[in-house]
Length: 119
Image (cartoon, rainbow, N blue to C red; front, top):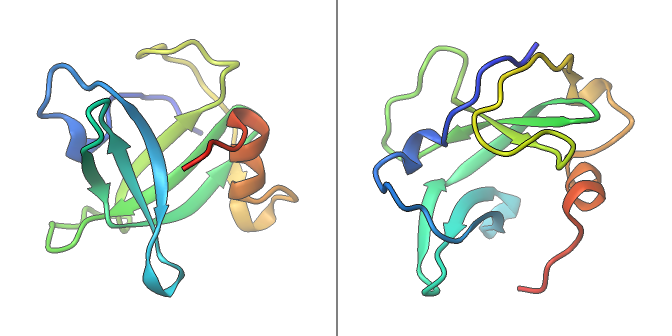
């Protein structure tokens, strides 16, 4: 059950976080999570992510950052909210299931909720 929201752990230092979050494919099929600023620069949030939980409204992954301390549970839990959930720190409870038990992949969930953007 997901029930607490705040900004991504490694993106908490800038008060004005312009731009948007996206995933970045790296060598070896590793997926990273970044914020692309409006000026074109990129802030790396996690150099590797592992998708864990999914529901109609939520996609959750564990993020890892090279050389950073890893908390109990194996990474920094990060929630992506579907557009059906208001933006900001709106709290609530969203039942989830393990992604390996879902008929929907993380990629399918992202495309369904956000479409495909040109690079």
